[in-house]
Length: 276
Image (tube, rainbow, N blue to C red; front, side, top):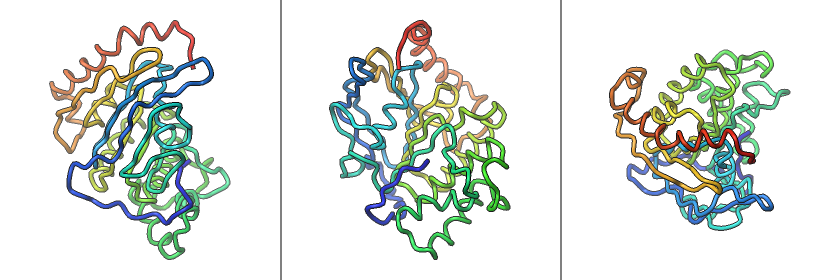
């Protein structure tokens, strides 16, 4: 589901052409009763930057993303998008979930239009935007299809189109390709990179896949510990646009091994610990 505010009209994304900071996270902490999930998270994401977030299971990656989106209240610290402090979902921020989040009773067209209608966008503007984004994600011709009629990959394309249709300043992605098979996942990775090249936006990308994090990100943020914190931030100095050839570059392999080496010992320990 796309989390958007209905309190104000959505505004088109503006390409500022600079390295302005879109997201600022300062001293963020979250707990569930006696369980402290993460503590003291400091994170920034620049205009049109993709920041991938990785960490062992149970370290709070999804919880962190939901706090940044305003879906969960934090216990300490703050999140600021541009100059707006986030305490609930705000306009111009969209989230794509791993399990598609589509309304089963709505067609592709109506699912993509949902966030726009909730934000009070005019019918004429919805009519203009929705077909464009359906075409952008490769679903032209499936406007009248229902989710049950589509493959997992097609459903995730629909969810992505719904998020993109609000022309967000910030796109939050929580394991967006985890629910599809390996072949479809690779196809969708490069489709997302293609779309991002056409319509760049600030993106936080949570994933369990180290290879995916290195392929997508300008930086990879590694969470570790209980409660977790940012253990290391690794700059990904691979040129864009990134293609399947990127996967064969020696530098890609070096960066993948560096991220894996940072995570490996704690990932093994996490398999034998209880946590949320």
